[in-house]
Length: 260
Ligand SMILES: [Zn+2]
Image 1: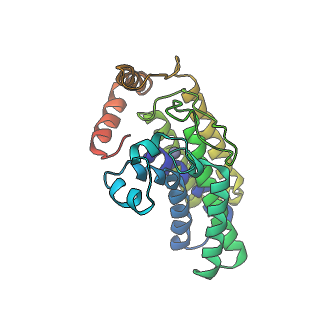
Image 2 (image 1 turned 90 degrees about the horizontal axis):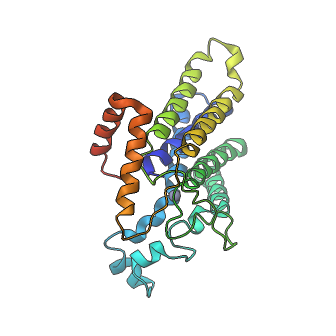
Image 3 (image 1 turned 180 degrees about the horizontal axis):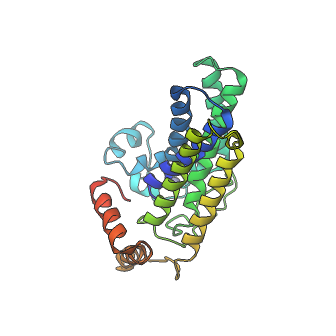
C-alpha cells in the first residue's frame, strides 16, 4: 500500500487514542495524532536500501556484499517487508516510545502508556494495510518475525491507486475529529467506543472494497504484466468512484511526488 494510505491509517488509529485519552488542549491532541501518523509511515523506512546513495554510504560502512536493490528485494531480516514489518518490531518500538515519553518528556506512566499504545495501533495499521497487496519478491510480510514465514500477499489489489480506500480512511478520520467537537455538547459521545466503532466500520468497508476487486493482481516482473495490472487498478477506481471523483483523485495523484 502507498505511504499516503499508511500515514492516514496511522492518523485514524491516533484519532481513537485522542478520544480514549480524554486529552485536553490542542497541543496534546496534535501530539497523539502525530504519534499515530509517525507509526503509520515508519515501517517503510526500510525502503532506504533503494536510495541512490545507499551503496556508497551504508553499503560501505557495513561492508555489505549486496547492492541496496538486492537487499530491498531480498529476504534478509533488514530487507523490505522483513523485521520492520513484524509485530515484534512494533512492540519494541512502542516500548521505546514508552521510555522516551517517561524520561525525555517527563510524562506520567498513564500518559506514556497511552502514547505507546497509539504508536502500536498506528504501526499495526500499516502492517494490516500491506497484507492485501501483491506478494512481490517476498511473498507478503514477515509479520511473525523471528519465524521465517511471510504472510499476506493476498494480491487483492495493486500496490497503489487505492483511491477508494484512501477516501474511506480520510472519512473515518473526519468523523472522529467531528465527534471530538460535538462530544462537548453530547455527553453520550464522550465514550471513546464511538470512535472505535468508526474505525471498525472503516476497516470493514476498506476490506470489502479490497476483497471485491475481482481477479488477483499477480504479475511476473520484467514483463508487460506489471503495467497492465497498474492500468487495471486505475480502471477499477474509475468504475468505483465515477468519472468526476476519479479525475479529481487522478489530478491529486499527479501532484504527489510519491507513488499514490
Ligand atoms: Zn510497508
